[in-house]
Amino acid sequence: MQTIAITINKGGVGKTTLTKSLATAATAAGFNVVMLDMDTQQNAESWSKRRASQQGKPLPLARFTTEADLADELAKAKRAGCDLAFIDTPPGRSSEALAAVEAADVVLIPFWNDQDAYEGVLRTSSMLRRMGKRGFGILNFATPNSRSHEDTARAVLETIGLPMAPVVLHRYDAHRLASIKGLTAQENEPDGVAATEVELLWDWLAAILQMGTGATVHKKGEVA
Ligand SMILES: Nc1ncnc2c1ncn2[C@@H]1O[C@H](COP(=O)(O)OP(=O)(O)OP(=O)(O)O)[C@@H](O)[C@H]1O
Ligand SMILES: [Mg+2]
Picture (spheres, protein in one colour):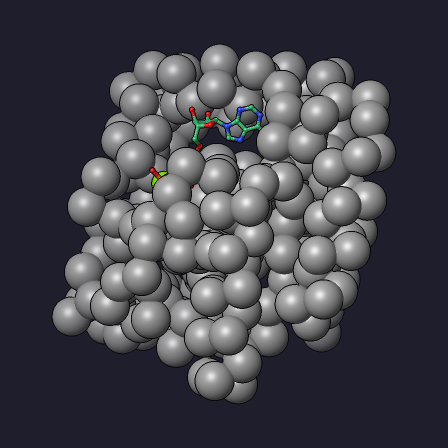
């Protein structure tokens, strides 16, 4: 099982949205996925409950998890045959974020094109470096049909020394509207640009994790 922590020392930049979107994409690709919600706001777990009650689509499941329970929850997920665990973390510096990074194979740092967010990226990437963890910046909320946010973000992250994912998520209401229904953009508006961006981001992450992107590939892997 591989563990992905989603964290940044900054609130509201899309941690929970990224967690839900990638966990759902991985589930749709045929992987067994668990989402661990370490934020006491419990946004991911609430989304999971909306999902189960409104859509009859419970997977992927999100469970609220404290720092004290994290190791046990990960061990339980591994025993249950999970391929991937995604951990959503609270905003700001917290013992939960530290524990999530400690447990992670890969850390994703969502941010947007804003000075405060860049300071958050710097703080979080310094923490990763101290802990010897592999991480990537994910630009979110970029202005659609414009390259200016991406160009600035790539220049700033190069200065910080944090690799940035090749796929950028732009600002689309599809994310917010899907969340109300316990869905993700790729489920609620599968033909939309937001959905395509998430799919491309998942393809990139699957390659980083050296996992096949499709259920067929996964099944082949199980047989082998
Ligand atoms: N690319 C996007 N385009 C439009 N809206 C987005 C996008 N990403 C996230 N949002 C919306 O922005 C809001 C904040 O996102 P989200 O809850 O994922 O951030 P967060 O980092 O988890 O916040 P917190 O720090 O409070 O946990 C939500 O309403 C979400 O639907
Ligand atoms: Mg959140």
